[in-house]
Length: 581
Image (cartoon, rainbow, N blue to C red; front, top):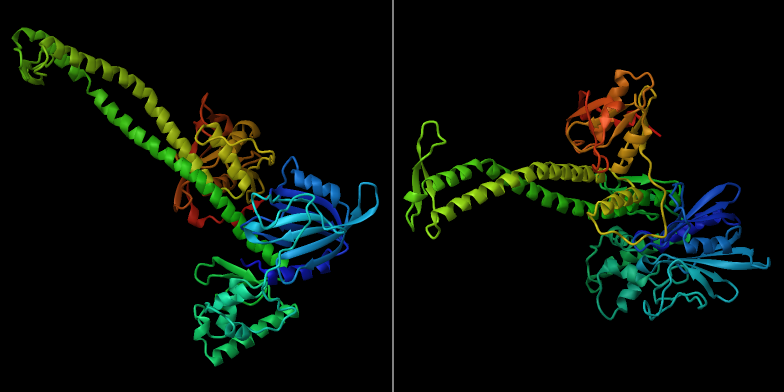
């Protein structure tokens, strides 16, 4: 991971310059593995501590995170023990991703006491642990580790906290060079693996950088290195080590030159990733932006993909069902011929012989009285053949009436699922995904989860201002669409929606509306629709009073009349021209 011991050291240096001796005013827990400490030290700071398995980190943040309505138990525990406390020291163990924050506070009787918040940023083993400094006893942790979960170390209230050391070399108190390690290796190893397996705090990216600067291939085996290569490796290793020891950092995010996709970040220059970088004045701001762009996106994408798969499967089933029903509808339209056949068989029953396979008879329903051929079941009597066709006619007649109801229902179901699929493409937060999941649960498209103890605040619709300053609201899911259109809007507000395709409900507040305002709202409706990638999109707009919702219809599904339509060219639309509130 990029957040290695070196980045941790850079963060610790920043924290000592900013929040040391600061007061912890508030403890929040936005999700089960993440804490945000509000700290005052001449000004307000927010310290983010994330112990998730995929993106563990610690940094100062400016981003606002939604907190659950009911605080989790560990959050309440920390509020009791460290809220109001003063941060007296911030240290890193060795060059490892383990941070100790000592906090002076008061015990239950009002006597001074020091507690230590231990932050371990170890991938899936990451944890946040509060211990008593005096006896090293664990008070509690954000993740409790039992004997069943780990036989190496338990993390439970009442047990003694133990830092598990490894046999890696710490460059801060050792001068052992890579060449020395290579000469003493029992088995050869790929060069880039040498540094992060033998030196504390080094990540694969920094290991690759040493190789790159030394002009040695990453995959080169240690036993294939010559003397010149070993010398270059030692020199560049010492160069990077001096940057670390002297706290000389270059906080940069690296991007792909062609796609501009984010590749990585670090406080050591990663020349092997190229020169397409964004430079930051602080390590925290770099970390904050990197994870806000990648972590949230990855988490949302992962949750969204699960729901998209569910919606896609339901869509496939309903599309297949609709195709089958339409075929049955075509067959049912041809049902009259079976009644005619049955009547003709009955009328000619005296002329039909046993074992006859075909009846050729005059069709008295035909104005021209043409003859007709009717297939017969040779094993049945004429009466039984007639009954067979009467029953087939009756079945198709009944089926036709059912199909007249079923086909619109399935078409409505498909439209609804397409609307959900379109909505999922525009979500930007986990909370929004959870709301769509809840909607699918209520519709029995997905299995209902057990009730969560943590309830998030509901997300709100997007709010823009037209170029003339009028309010435009955009629903981000069907729940918001219904709320905007049926409850929030006034009768004379304008309702805007992409024509005949899934998309967001857009409400334009009626306050001396101009054509330019309608155009801006129509552009947003096109942008937040399933046709957003097309050049031209048709958009309908009408007064809100012309919008109705059928009884029993799905969330977000409405119909409207007395509307006008605009053609929107999305290639000429720049959403940045509209102010987003």
